[in-house]
Structure formats: structure tokens, C-alpha cells
Image (cartoon, rainbow, N blue to C red; front, side, top):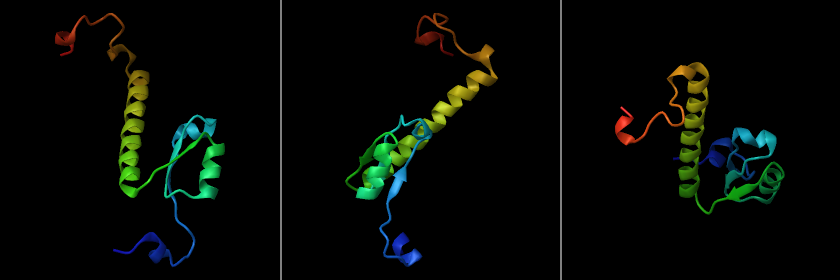
Length: 99
């Protein structure tokens, strides 16, 4: 399998990054792999950077951020769309009432 560098036929370093929507407010740490001084400096100014040691760690964090972002979107839009279906504080007394 060809690497992105081979496909693009460039000697430029390739860095993967996972910027999240909160980066626009400088409230999000961006995961990068591999670490690169220019890329790390950019994301540090935008809320922080977390360079990871290997591609496996990057892939795990990529999957987690995708899952969490989708989950938060679902929660935000579910409440906006169907506020009468939301469980209110004190409405349930125990796990047996969650069905």
C-alpha cells in the first residue's frame, strides 16, 4: 500500500491533525501525528496541541473524537427538536424507571 507521501510525490512532511469545532474559540486541544514544530506551533496558538507517539494512538483518538462529537450533536439536536421527550431532573428515581 502506498503512503500519502508516495501518492502525492512530494518530499513535504505530512502531519495528520484532529481539530475539533471548539478550536474556533481556542478551547480545544488538537491531536497531531507525527509531531512537527510548525504544525505544533500553529495548533498551540489555537488552543493547544497534543502530539501523539504513534499512528495507533492517533487512530484511537480519531475514533473517540468522532464518536463524542456525534454524541454531543445528537444530544444538542434531540433536546432542541423534541424538548417534551427529554427526562427532567428528579423525574426518575432509579434505573428501573428508565424503560
